[in-house]
Image (cartoon, rainbow, N blue to C red; front, side, top):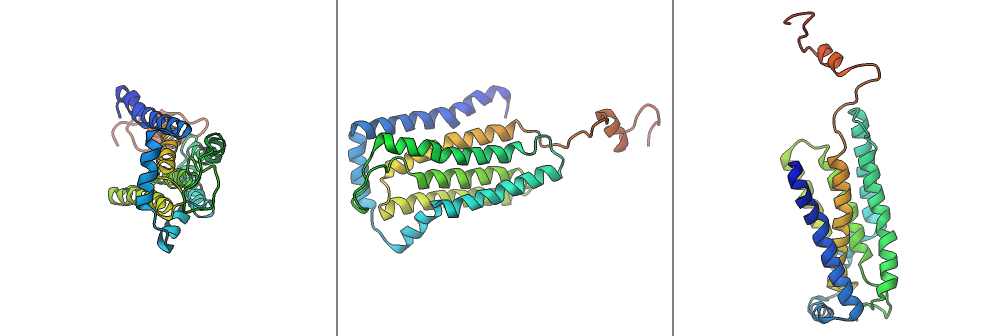
Length: 235
């Protein structure tokens, strides 16, 4: 991506989700018109069944986080094996993004104090959806980290498609089962998008090439790899 296009990409990746999240949060706090629409949509979608419950479970920490942990470990091993500079930085960014999910969601739940749908026992603290945020960040960060280790475009597309299926499946299950209002889920998409944008930026600014061993210059590496030099003539 050209440097001049980076600010526009950041605006799309961060600015729009932040604005949408702020709008939804404001509507939830003041019980605005969007909340009324949200509740009507929920009444039309809720139909608790075993399948929707299984889909919702994809956002459970014991399900989603181990997937990310495996991706973190593989990305770290792959980067170290290739001798990449700062190989540890992308896995660290993915781990930090995941740790920020409860750190952000828990205070927001307490602040907004939103009650749950009629399909769950009376309680508050349903906004935003922690399960959705967990799924978005865990599966999304795992995908971003693994994309850099794959060469096949078909496999890369399949990985992105799988990530989308897991996140959308989790979101659908949460709404269909009645565990969350639709706006709870959409807000967590926005929150997750911002966190994943941070992981993406770290990946973009982390060199993927091999390290230069101490005491070995780049010109020495080029000569030793077979590049002609002025002293030995054509090879």
